[in-house]
Length: 441
Image 1 (cartoon, one colour):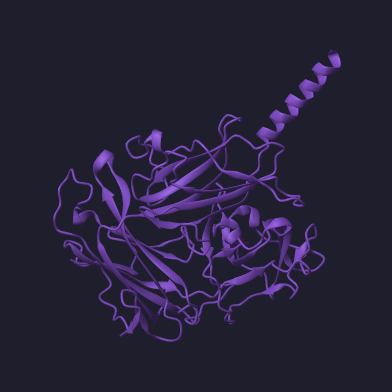
Image 2 (tube, helix red, strand yellow; image 1 turned 135 degrees about the vertical axis):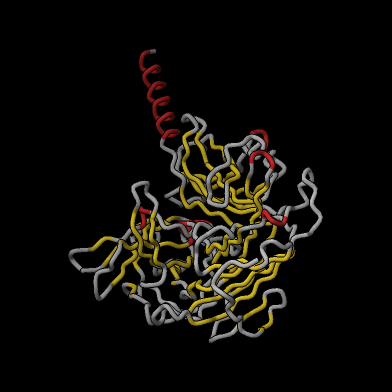
């Protein structure tokens, strides 16, 4: 009897320990079931969330969704975040394929869905938190996505222009103009009508970089952003200094002979080099390809990224990409290998194909990376083609005030030399002419 009690206690301790040590692996977020689409969805579409865990038993997980401000600060307001509509009741999962060693269960869910009462009642920025319900609701991981409603008419123009205050190649920039037409009819208690004076902000998202937008705001002091006719329903928001950037690098782990399971993966072409004066090959605009990799080919690999530089950088270096959801994170900083002189970092990723790049920055006391520089190590060239999404924010005065996104327009940078693309017609138009350097009525 005593032996049975001891075995039971050992089992109980191991179960509790496993539950409290749950690690979320390979978190991915994308739009409407399409892994090539950033997690920016329209009302009526779904956001797809995927991740893996390595536990003996399926953990008791829940996802909580929270509406946030345009600066990603959660709205602590029950009228905006209704508790009955922001928590999952069920998460679908499958057992890992036979032969996989680094995870045991895989979760793939899209929201809203019929098995949960989750609703994205309002448009805007959303954060979600994956919690362990058996460990005091500990937050295991979090992510971000954006929900858009189309209540305004909008169009976007992108032009290549030289920025005279910058040296080459930093002077190759985009001028982006977003024209917004707000319906004039407004009724205070009708959420489908808008007070046009509260449309003050437009964010330009480059590819998947949701947390590093280029912002045009009526109330900012930025000498490179402008709002014309802000007292009228038809407004023009524009910015004149978005860097062209470079095509992303490619981490292709698809070849199982070159990169076998359970072995450290290093790029076969040797260490990466600075691309300051070197144009990259066409990329996937920040997307990652994982769906074709199934069975034992869906396991995780430890990857070592290596970078060779002719001189030490002025800031810390980080690698970012689809494997970080395009956030610059402290855990992906490069350090110097004293034996080789290379800058290196190791991390685990699921087998797949990822866009990535190197970023300079400094780690703040709170763990965020500030003063980010996406150009110095990677180059800046008009030939780069990027996906651009303009998000039109509205400050809703109800419930004490919160941010909605009442319109969006998608386009791309022109590529090539000086020129422009009108994304409403997808045809080239004449180059944008800068106006006076101030926000005008």
